[in-house]
Image 1 (cartoon, rainbow, N blue to C red):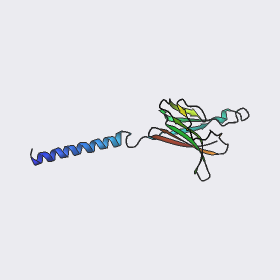
Image 2: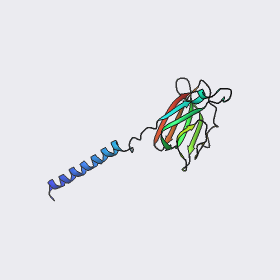
Image 3: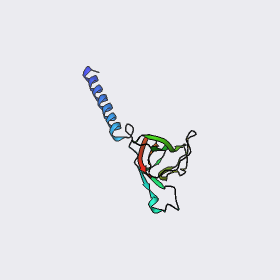
Image 4: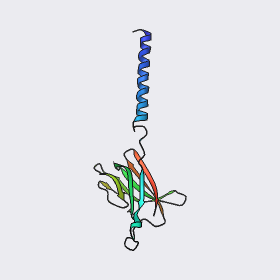
Amino acid sequence: MSESGNQRVYVWITLLVVTAGAYVTFFTDLVFPPELEVYAEDLDTLRSDEEYPIPFIVFALSDRVQLSSLEVVKLESGGEDGPVVWSLEADPAAMEVDKFVYGSTISGMAPPDDAPPRERLERGQRYRLEVRSGRRKGSVEFGV
């Protein structure tokens, strides 16, 4: 094969590699996984404080996913993370969810061995929920 024939082969191989790299970068989730959108809704407006003294917070996710972990942290003044008030980790058989209630049992998830017990949410306090599903993650700040 002549030298110009070798150059053509190298150009085609380079073009193929650049095209494949562009495809993976822009059209798949391998490089930049999409963010998992999380929403929090306080349903205390549907209840009276005397009957249900514990805040009733429902979290909704943008997709039905198998969560890897979730963690709720208390936010200190200034927005810094405070102590963890609720934490769960999944086992391989965790169920897919698209919504759940604060403090509820999610099938296939359990508190980590070193996690503190779940705390009640305090009225007037701000919190942040952080969730992971594989490489996807999302968070939402909410108040009670």
